[in-house]
Image (tube, rainbow, N blue to C red; front, side):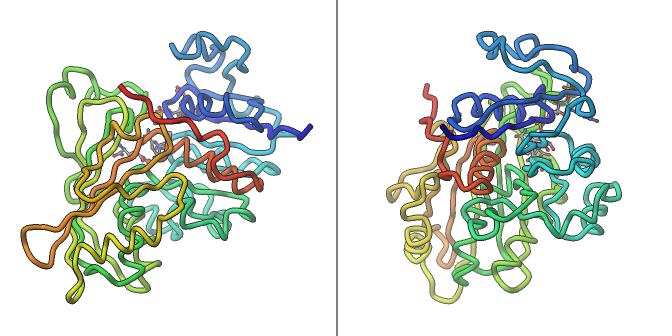
Length: 347
Ligand SMILES: NC(=O)C1=CN([C@@H]2O[C@H](COP(=O)(O)OP(=O)(O)OC[C@H]3O[C@@H](n4cnc5c(N)ncnc54)[C@H](OP(=O)(O)O)[C@@H]3O)[C@@H](O)[C@H]2O)C=CC1
Ligand SMILES: CC(=O)N[C@@H](CCC(=O)OP(=O)(O)O)C(=O)O
């Protein structure tokens, strides 16, 4: 019998932490050893979540500093940024898969500019691997810290990296319009996320300045070998989970939408989770809900020299907890898809 991987989930009373636990319950190699919360410490998972009523044996939520990390193989940080690096930097021994923004930006000064606080553990930044799994398979197996991308960057980078790597699009005219379900904003109570504020309506936010911009530009520029500038506008839509991005790109030289399609075909053929849809089929969040799958497609625009790339993910799975488990699998030499094979939930 193989030894299980003992995991601790910090922030299990939040949306990403809960989805991590949901996925971990059916992962054949995971043993859930400890779960933390902040205000909800002391409660059971069944008390704080409706969907864990049938799992009374899950560990009780405790404060992170009450956890004995001896014998824990991996810690998942599902905490707000800053609190995450603060807590994770005190843990020695286990590997770390962080879902917050704290280890994504390579430069502590850029982090401070965009997040408004000094980085709590800049000494750890050099050892963190940016965990967009499909583009980090060579570095994740030896990494101690995986920095899982934000949900919007996961969608946008999967749609753009194969194109900028091959020089198929203009690197300074990329417009990303993205829609997110409300779970993307976390479970803590905020007036802006109350039902009457979000139902039957759509609104943009973070207009002109959103903290995912430097993250996207860092990764795109690094792969393009030159500076890539994006325009990005997120929108909040009245659904629980799911994210869809429509990206307008200017084609390089005499490239066509068919060239972009061929690039996706070449890059993602055989990928277990990233799927180029048949020509003309529009990606939709209902195609991936509850799963680690990503669907994307490319369309010619009416205007010559322009094309549209559309991508859909589930923000709580490929956009956070699913990708975190995909990264853990690679960090421990397990099959990348282990525990993530469930098909999307529909209707
Ligand atoms: N939601 C999403 O779609 C995505 C989120 N992320 C990132 O993942 C992280 C978690 O997000 P999400 O699950 O949505 O957040 P939630 O607000 O739903 O959950 C936050 C969790 O952290 C705990 N917590 C809050 N403050 C502290 C603190 N100071 N010390 C210790 N624990 C604390 C909360 O405990 P308690 O409930 O007891 O207060 C809760 O368990 C964030 O960094 C977020 O930006 C990344 C990708 C997608
Ligand atoms: C709908 C909504 O509010 N979404 C969040 C992004 C969620 C995410 O990926 O956040 P991190 O980068 O902190 O991990 C936002 O726009 O801030």
